[in-house]
Image 1 (cartoon, rainbow, N blue to C red):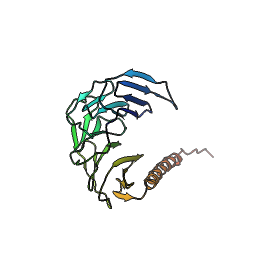
Image 2: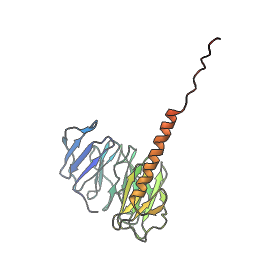
Image 3: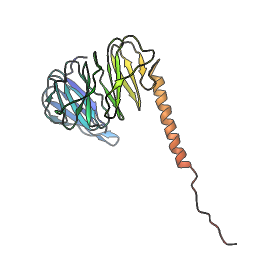
Image 4: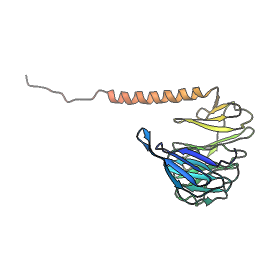
Length: 239
């Protein structure tokens, strides 16, 4: 995808963040079930702009200028950020923000983005998808023939995932997440790869239904725990 000049992201609290390359930024906080009033502020101007959220932290990526910034920090020049780089999709709080470049997936410190980046994977060889974090695991994907998908959990480096019945070409990989279920969707031809079963699936509804069933089972278990009979002391009276 080409560089962007304005962007929007929703953080873990439901707050909305928007900004453009001129340095205009707006935040709309989430207040219960509604949104608060927009709060405008000035940030550093940039050559291009993409936004994401890591928990409640807002991350600004400038692929033309090659910079990264968190919240109101000044942009930090990073040699790892090159043309075609993508910042992660909004996700849970974490110590790192993920940035996928055409040849690698990096983890940059949220608290000190100028620190040495962690190489999560160097398996890239094409246009990257915006990476994603789900719970304690991270995922990256790159276009190619046949394309590359990696997964890493905790502090471990990511490893390659081999999906059965995968197409010969992965043209425009996009991650889709439903609760804990993660798939790669090729936006060019609609193919979907379930990264839990490592199988190609016919439609996203199959994955959504599985995630829903998992949630239903979890809720049933909770209810069962609540309904378990509790031992009560015997009330024995003298006869």
